[in-house]
Picture 1: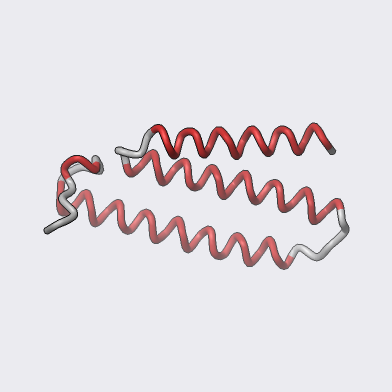
Picture 2: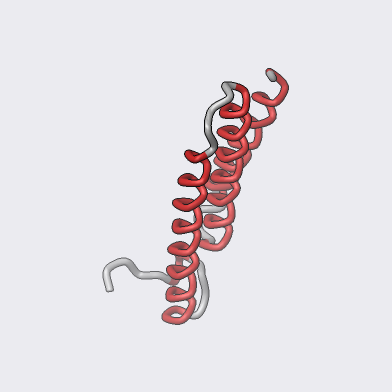
Amino acid sequence: MMNMMIIFLVMFMIGNLIFVSKHKHLLIVLLSLEYLVLSIFFFMLVMLIYIEYDMYLLMLFLVFSVCEGALGLSILVSMIRTHGNDYFQSFNMLI
């Protein structure tokens, strides 16, 4: 159980490291957020199996993570259509 906790912690830290280091590229930021959601899902799955609890909370978590992914993808598509790429340098926040 402790080895799995270390693996989940490493997965979460790698996702955070990618999120912080690649903050200028929207697609990589969205992919790292999905990786973080996946690592949190696996952690919750193992913990709920360990305490023998119902899995309805995981279904609710998956619903919200899918909505988050769809919202991020729609923002990415609208940004590419208006600005031509997904780099934050070309995106002016004042306009």
